[in-house]
Length: 70
Image (cartoon, rainbow, N blue to C red; front, side, top):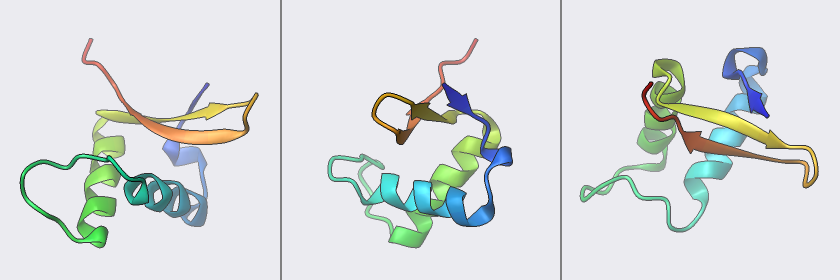
């Protein structure tokens, strides 16, 4: 299920994004970025519609996934 990021509290949204960027294997390109910059980048992707937050009710977990352009 897609969860609109605008329906989350600021605290919940920040926690989800911080969890996502702290996972190993997340690729942000050839240039190293600070943790805060990565969080800002993911937030921009959510705002631009390039990424979405998903919730799996079976595992009760959230993730952030890329959105394919239509």
